[in-house]
Length: 368
Image (tube, rainbow, N blue to C red; front, top):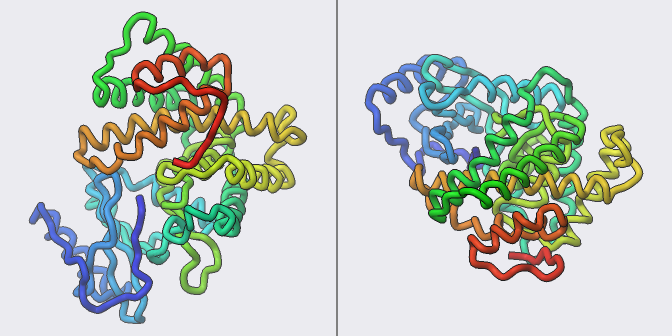
């Protein structure tokens, strides 16, 4: 989810709202009319804010006070909004700047939210000057540590072996089979099975915290209005799992690649803050950044295999070709990590064969 929120409300819709289902439009009109007075809304100002990769879309509506609100349109037969509501409350309790749910019509799938603005962290980043973004990334690190410190077991679904494996299967099922036309059999299947088993074992060994699961600049919002914190969006899939996940997500971005010196710089600073907060009390992680960083790499590998599969599915099944255009970035991440570890050598060799790429010599992170 990426809410593109205008900080300057207008009384005239810039992108008018259209409906493909007249019955759903009627339900919406009834709901917005019902809450307009108590919430101080100006329904005639309704316009499109953004859509995301799911069946949700987001609308913006002005208030009589001169600011704005966000409406989530999430058809209940396609989207379950309960996790969003529950996790938004968890984030607020943790002191994070997350959207507040002002009204939720659960039966019809309409929700009114506070507006976090329209400027994502991604929009503020200068990709050509890594150090110019240092302060932004440190704000993101502070937000992440604050979220992890609120963690309690038994609150969010577990990021367990079943879920990790289900995500990994997206790579052979969608990226290889559907996109590349490669059906894994025999020795090839065995290479992937062995690698996936090892990846899951390594990642489950890490201590568990709250995991946002898509913690990256496109889902973080620049401070807006009176709030000095980064805003956090797209948290409805949060789970309780490896502490290495969200920092891997932040620094090995789905849409942006940094040279490794910048990745290491921010990851070390995250590790130092997490260590001081008592989050690194596992084996030798509190004293050995290298041990923690290896765990981040193995976690990042799982994420990149998953996302390559998801992006192929979004393109081939859902007709959203812009996602698969980022596949080379993920293959670069995957191959770079596999090149680091001897036990992943067979997986690297097989991916190189499938992709028709030249085997890597040494390790180079390199900006894409």
